Image 1 (cartoon, helix red, strand yellow):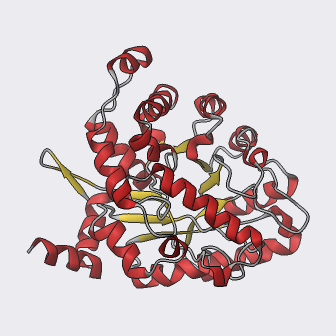
Image 2 (cartoon, rainbow, N blue to C red):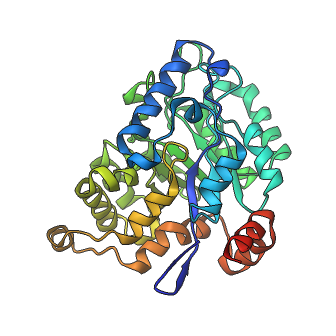
Length: 343
């Protein structure tokens, strides 16, 4: 957590990873191209002191993650946005199976997301059931631009995708994180188009669609959709990283989101290890909207709003009692290390 003016702010990093992008795991040239594209995002938007060497960026260890998120990064809990990419990486990029290793070691610190792909077809429905039975899956991360064989992507409105969403209802999975934002080489930008969220959110009003990266570069389209579909949420990963290099651009993004969605449907995400949460959270806490933007949009980024974005909104979606969770976290291994740091 981070303390501001005597207040403790509970932080849930709604979008983080523990990936293996090492050359040994590259299946083909696209695995390498993916990592080089990711690294360009990292170098371009990070403060100079937070830029990693490429080899560390490709594969970092558990201790690095624990330090960057929890010991130094103010994060209390993280949501694993499992990303598979088995067409590019031999063992997958960061699958729910790989992420479960850390979930087991620190069960109170992580929320584990799985996935589905409608291209799995009928046979995949049983595999999806088994995933939820065998692992503590609390949400899903969907990557509609992921390649599979000759296919270069899919849509939430595909008939088979609806079969999986219906199964989500049956299995009690309510939170659907969908990457609808900037493209990464070699994926197709149009396969991340946000428009299919509209119909899916309307047809499944009992599911929550957390649109990661808030549809960038299609922010206007996203906002118009989210205005009418109250079960659509904005994930700030990538968008919030512009707070350092292009603060006015970020101001325009967050002002639009506050104007259209209000403060209760925006979730913080660092997109670790694209970026480290410490500098993003510090800059976000200190950030103020420029007066002209504040006046034009009629919104303000108050400390109360920042509290909601940094953790309270995600806690509500995942049924987390923050006061009770704080007590649990104080007793786990990471909480004990934090206490020792203070002492």
